[in-house]
Image (cartoon, rainbow over all chains, first blue to last red):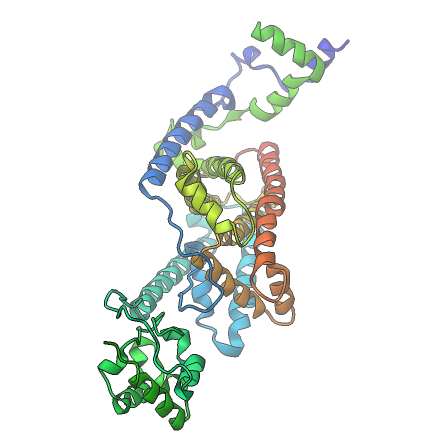
Length: 254
Length: 223
């Protein structure tokens, strides 16, 4: 059976019988001629890609920590334009940025062939489509750029990790049963550490060596807005601020 | 010998018509960079596919070591990067390839758009192409979480919050995405499953359609 049966069903004329057929200038067979050229382009591309990989190693940040830690999140670069778009629809209008604008844009993209349905194909012969796409691309580039700039700005203003090299070695806490210690644990430990060793905020071990209770109370009341500490450090009750300040003033190191 | 082997297989499976269908056609001059340098813009689609192939291969090798649970995910990625032979290259390829796919796909889409190649009779192929675009974006979103580092975790947390703002169905979308109320162990396995099973299946199907349609409809003529 069958050898010839299959041959009969081969679509088209075999290449070797087509030699004398007239073809448009420059046309060439996909296999193997054109594919070979594609492979050459592909190989060069791959070599460049691998060189890039070798010289740009990927780094992990710290392991994921679900506790809010002041880490400023940033989506991958190709989501930045969407991310930035949301910033222009704050509060109750955010659904405009999450649903309406991306939804309309995606729909327009999908149905583009039916919107731009003239026979003309040259970009200059269909000015509406060409202009619309050019503007859309420019908008995406601008949004991405803005997102990047604003992220850099946020990073520059974020509280710096505290240099702990100067931290006193003797780390015993004084008078842990104090009422101020309880307030500290509730309101301050998140940033300054339950053991006063610091975290997002600076360490406070031995803070009593530098300031007395009155000075500490003033610092707490004013806060450090530039450094991320709100006035009062999140404590609204003056009496509680005084308790914490008194307790911190006791934290002296030899 | 080779010819005999080929004939033997061909006789039983009818390979010749299949490969003639796939590979035996003429490529017009205007898409050939060997004729005109500016025709390199027609390479973007092929290069996108090439990078997708490297993504599939590097992803398969990463899957040999990667562990999708919150205790080991970070450490397994660290292990791949620091210990496995050429692991840093494979991971680098998967990491940078993700961006490269997006770039090449975007350029390919712009080329198709500005040459008006989506016009009749190729509308459906454009639609499939846009769907591929969305699937690839999905790969980016789900793949970003898998190393389970701070960047991954918090970027995904923001993504989930954004999904939650969708009117009416937002909270349901968020639950569907992260697999519960909080971003945690379920989120990681869920994103992993989407990244290595659901999306690849969708992508391969759509790519198949994309290529079949290119063969059926041919390449659009010169501008």
